[in-house]
Image (cartoon, rainbow, N blue to C red; front, top):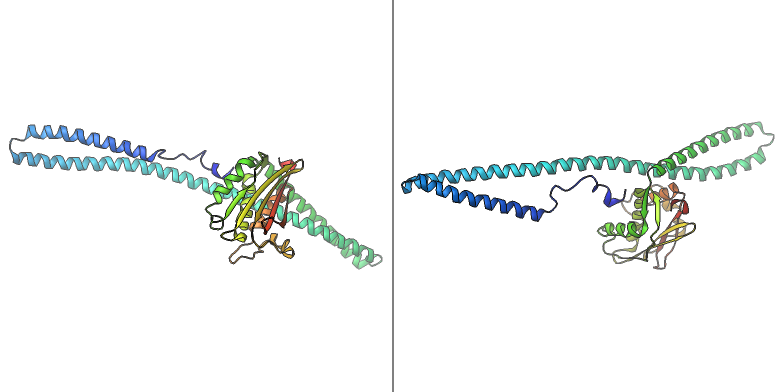
Length: 321
């Protein structure tokens, strides 16, 4: 579910119009107080025969007014605070469920990324085994070791395929409809207060009204990670450009920055778990990007931007549109 819609369908505000409600409460209080003062004044005058008696009656009347006002304030405050508490409990419960769901989504992303990398390594390993086969003819020991290696590799291959298919089934069961024309500007606005984004010049080309069917949380995480990283690379007075285009093969989302760019020798390393060039960084942001594109059979590439820095391109295949 998109970021802004995660709670508003369930939790409603305790007070929809605070100023209007406060004004109405004040009006009711002033009206009741005025009625009380007029009626109690007439009642006091009818009971008191002397100024001393009137003073006693006014004293008791004042005490009664304070007690009544206190009880009224206590009742209204208890009602409002209890309503706020109930809604806070609902929000906390929803946040816990959301956190669990997002943790599951992240775990699926990493599982998909790991399975993708395992397959790549296995392809290289199979090439090595083919080379060993050519030299192992007639050598029983090497042949037996190679046979064991092949069986182990086949088991790992089946495990990787099982991980990939399980993640894809789960992804398909939890897909959302996203309109890039609306979702990308919304994400940019949500990020404008981020310390790495708020001072930058952020622009986006005309965004096509392209519909995607994929996991909204994973997509948002990928794009937001790219935007934050681009903002950090560009610096406080840098520029960001978001561009999106579609064709018969799918959709491409590009994030350009005016930073120093990416060293070609590090282009592959930056997607590895734990790799970071930032002090205190976790090295998980771009891995999340890689995991997202792996989950939808997409692709992420790095190039040189027209702004002078890097451009990260998310390629989402036609099957997701």
